[in-house]
Structure formats: structure tokens, C-alpha cells
Length: 475
Length: 100
Image 1 (cartoon, rainbow over the protein chains, first blue to last red):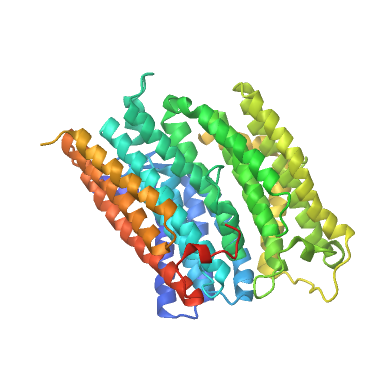
Image 2: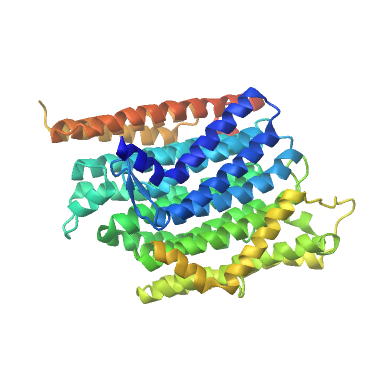
């Protein structure tokens, strides 16, 4: 009894989200028109969870018979998800309201997705990781198909579901092999069992299959096929959530399972992860060049960013893990900002996301134009914005680890990415708006999210060392 | 009792059948069925290891997998129905507004 109480307190951030999710579900089932109360309850729940996360952060441990990691690194990941969720909810309130999409259901499903992200990224047992993955995925499949009368949304949901379930099968098969090799699904025990250098075939096969499942979730080449279609077809608010929270959860799990827990066994896979990083950086940044839709362009660029983060993962070090978390924080703020502007540009049918629709935005809406430019500069990695330091720390760790080849490719592809990010700015500031092109109106909540993101991007750029030290100290 | 290798081979064959089904068939429902076959092949692997290692945890995992598969089926079929209502098709070749 005492154990259960202690474990519940230790995993309080997760419980806060679960309770809020169920509460919003009940409120919304009671009254279908209760979008607004559901929204406020969700904000309160996220706030409570964030406070509990910070409170538990200094006490790293495990809960529920070693199923879940609590405190420490788990707190860092949880905070990332909460930041992403909060900003997404702000954007979604205006964006989904405009499209007459169900905002209540969106809020509930996002909360359930977060309830899956936490065990997915902080599981200490492969079973917990798998259940977290599936709770997250099932919520995301539904979210992608949220606007069910739009065919693009149906199509994106179907593709995401079929490919996601397919990858989930590989992930599970990997767990089965690791269980057969180690007679346990506890990741720490598995790592302890294979602390020597001779790895049985079962262990290697299992880890490789696990790697496939995780690479799919992070959207790394060659498991990226779903990324552009899903990010383009999903409602923009959902895309924001996928690209921020979804990506953070996938990398959280990647780092927890491979870098932090499987430890030195994962060094066997450093080259494989390095090649995935290389392919993602090259493919993502080149395939983004010919895109005409900004959502699709940002989707391809997210494949490239996954590549940069994988450089940090493959170093299999605490510095690498901290670098990835810092990169994710920067990427979450930058992406929510950029997608907030895109969401403001959209009309009721979800149109207006072609790059040419941004013509003259710098004159018609100077603030939106300037903010989008700021986010794009951060995505390229130009100082003094956070994106620069995110890349800098990852590259620095990789050089210390002796992976100069990856860093050179990383710098080269960043230069390539200049082209397609700058093209948007050229269209915004040097092209006249077309005839009867509607002038976008950003809602109040969207503006709050975008301005908060911009402030975060600048603050991270001004005090990168402080934040990085703080993040690295919990790993 | 046959050796562990037989069970693992059988489940590997079932898993591969599922993978081939996903990659070659074009009907969303058949693809989904193939994915279920993959999951059940994994269940068989878990049970075989569990029996031969004399360890019950593998069988508990299978219960979780079955529950997850049921949840996935509910969501997946709902997505297929939403698609069918819009387009009267479940053939993934006809689902191509976004470039595949």
C-alpha cells in the first residue's frame, strides 16, 4: 500500500495529465458544447502537471516495480511535451475554430496523447514503452483524421495509421527477441545482462527491430515516407502537435532506450544511427527545395532536423542526450511559432498554405512577416537565435566524439537549407500580394503562442549555456 | 514437445507473410489484416519464449498486446469508414490527393 502511494506521488506529473484527460472527456460527454470549459480545464491540468514535474525533477528514480522512470531525465522530457502541448492548444483554439473542427475532442485527444508520451519516453520497461507508444499513436491517428469531411485529412490518417501500425509490429517483434535473449523486458536488466562485449544474435536482431520502430516515429530516412503526407494532410493545429510533441516523444524514447539505458550495447549501433542521420539530413534538406506548399516544405525540413538530432543520439553520451533535449526545446518553440503563422494564413477550408500565398505578407502584416522570418532564421541556424546554438552544441558533442564526417555533412546541408527557407522570406518581402488575396487575421490565442515562441527563441539564443547546463544536469 | 526453433520459425514465417501482405496488397482492410497477422506472430514468439524460459512475463505481455491491437482496430476501422463515406473506396491506390 505504501509503495503504491509513493509510486503515485513519484509519477504525479503523469497522473495529473491522465486525470485531466478523463475529466475533460466526462465534461465533454456531459455537454457537447463545452469546448471552452474543456480548454480551460486542460490548461489548468497542464499547469499542475508542469509544477509537479519541476517538483519531482531533483528525485530521479523508478516507480511501479521498475516500470517507469520518474524525475531526472523523465522530468526534462515531460516538460518538453507540456510546453509543446500548451502552445499547440493556443494555436488550435483559433485554427480549429476557424475550420469549425471539433475543438473539445482535439483537446481531450491531445491530453491522452501526452499521457502516452510520458511512459513512451520515460519507460524503464519495454512493455511500458510499447504501451506508451500505442496510447500516443492511437490518439495521433484519430487527431490526424479529425476533420473527417476533408479528404486530405482522411487520407493522411489512413496512411499514418497503416504505416504506424506496420512499424509498431516491428517494434514489438524487437521487444519479443530482447525478451527471449534476456528473459526480461526491463531495459536496465537487459543492459546489465549484456554488459560484456559478446552479444547474442537474438539481442542484436531485437535491438535492430527496435531501432526500426523508433526511426519510424522520429521520421528518419528511410522510414520517413509518411512524414510529408501526414504533416500536409492533417489539420494545421494537429501538424503543430505532431512536429513538436510527437517528435519530442520519439526522440525521448530513442535517447532513453538506446543512449541512456542500453548504454554501451548501443555503441554497436552508433554507425547505423549515424547513417540514418546522414540520409535524413541530405534527403530532408534537398527534398524540401522544390516544394510549393509551406506545410509540406516544413515537413521535409523536419526530416532534416531529425537527422541533426540523430547526430546527438548516436554519440550515446550524456552530453549528446542533453544536446538533443536542447535541440528539441528550440525546435518546439520555433515550429509552433512558424505553424502559428501558417495557421493564421489559412482560410476556413484549410487553404492558403502555398508559399505564393505568403506574397507581400511583410507589408500587409508586418508583425506576422517579421515573426515568421525570425522562426525561419532560427530553423536555418543563424545566430543569435536558438536554432544556431542547438546545432552548435550537437556538432560540438559529435566532434568531441570523433564524428567529424557527420558534422561536415550537417554544416553543408544547413547551407542548402538556406535556399528554401530564404525563398519564403523573398516571397514575403519582395513580391506584391496577388489580386483579391485575403489578408490574414491572427486570433488572440495564436498571437500569444507565436509571441511566446518568439520570446523563447530569443531567450534561448541569449542564454543558451544556462539552459543547456540545466538540461544536462538532470540526465 | 518440439524445440523452440520450430515455434520461432513458425512465427517468423507468419510475420513475413504479414509484411509481404502489407507491401503487396492494395485493399486497406487486407493491409490491416496483414498487420494483425504480424502482431499475432509476435504474440506467438512471446508465448514460445515464455514457455521455454519457464517465465510467465511473456504471456502477460501478450494480454497487453491483444488489448492494444483491439484499440488499434477500433481506430483503424473508424478511419477506413470515414474514408469510405467520402470516397466510396478502400483501395489505397485511389487515395492519392497527397503525393504518396
